[in-house]
Length: 296
Image (cartoon, rainbow, N blue to C red; front, top):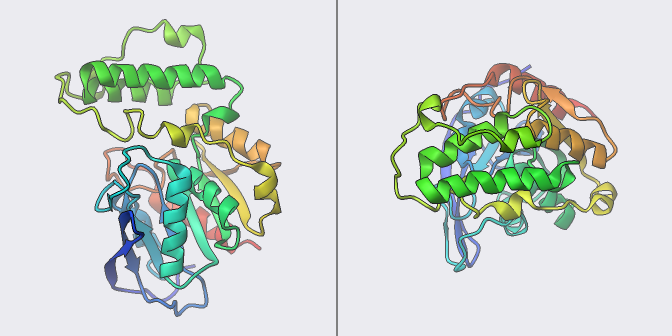
């Protein structure tokens, strides 16, 4: 059960030399509750998506951040791609900046892939990692077809902009089961079906729809290195995600690591309160996360 409510949030910037990383500290550092900081990360989502979950952990010191080149974080490395190994070094620097590890880490979506790269490179940074639905395409039995589906989404975005690309992304991520020829035989997804604009907005740099995050979904975790790490790794999957893309990648990743995925309430954004228009169940999600973090 939650204890004393901790108030106060400070925003800080960490200069890594080739990036300025924005992060928010909710509560005191050093912590006053005998627990390490709880760090929340995602990709390409920034800290704003964790607002509802932070509220559920008002008794803990919680740290959120914006990945380099996203949100308030800027980059000076001359690159536009999003690399899990580069972002892992940023998170390592962040952990050092808040007092060093080990911390407890909840990581969702592409952030879960960053977290696996972090544990591989800096195994003493994290005591417990809850990796929620990492979209690791190479672990799937239909990896080639999944990459083809990803390319189809990107092609729609490149051809017609955000609305067309996002419609294809929704169609891809809501498809049940493996990507068969039936999936590819479908007509192009209609943006209007999802309340999206049909007009081309002119953008071609969206981190979700462009090819800038393909290094994230193409990442291959080193299972031997992860198994040797002292970090307790828990692969989490939303109960509503079990048959769709990120649910399948979570289950396959758990199997790769020799474990069964831990089922959480709701869907891929189950910890969210509607910040991006598709609310999850943040209270129930946080309750489950507390239970997992408290397990020894």
